[in-house]
Amino acid sequence: MEVPARVDIAGERSARPAGLLGVREVRPVVAVAAFLVAVLIGVAIGYATADRGSGDGTTVNSSGQPAPELTPALRTAPWEGTRQPGRAHQMRVDDEPNPTALRLALSWTVAEQIRAAGNSTITAAQVTVPQGMFFGAVEGVDAAHDAYWAIGRIEVAGVASRPPDPYVWRRIGTGPWTIVRNGPNACTAIPPVLIQEWKGQPAPCAG
Image 1: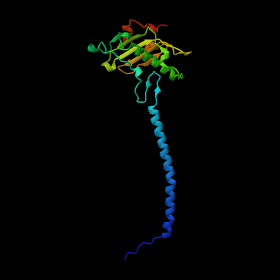
Image 2 (image 1 turned 90 degrees about the horizontal axis):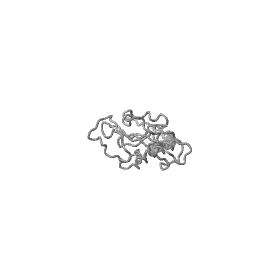
Image 3 (image 1 turned 180 degrees about the vertical axis):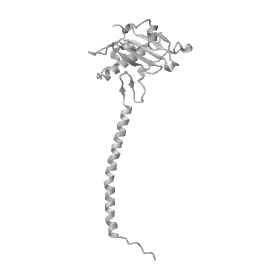
């Protein structure tokens, strides 16, 4: 004959409050942990989507794409039908679909560079790339790899101390214009084939 197990009613009753107390103590800890996780996720998302300028003068918007001012329209490359990767070309700014937009893109990169250095009020409208700029290209294996180069000097209104000249900019395919280098040694970054095409160092490199 099976004998029912004895039940310690008093013990069972005394155990329940302890269990409930444990649950009550754990819940605040779980809530705090969940809150901290939410805060960390929010910080990570904010960092990933924040607008930030880089040292090369490229502005990235909230979608991670370059600012449209940095990617002006390009004309169809005249070498498209006879492509020879590595061949250099002297080009004219005025032959581009919008020469003003091209100069604005270069001004934009300089303004971003100055802002990154601490002058948060500078705008592209204060930066001018005067006449005398050199413009050229080196063919890539396809249009997406064509490298466009610009060499010039800058003028900045309302700034006591501006970055040193000359400036060398580059654009790969339809990507954004970026600053390759500026200052006394900037022109050493220009591809030798382009120097040959220009018959020597471009004028902005002098002085």
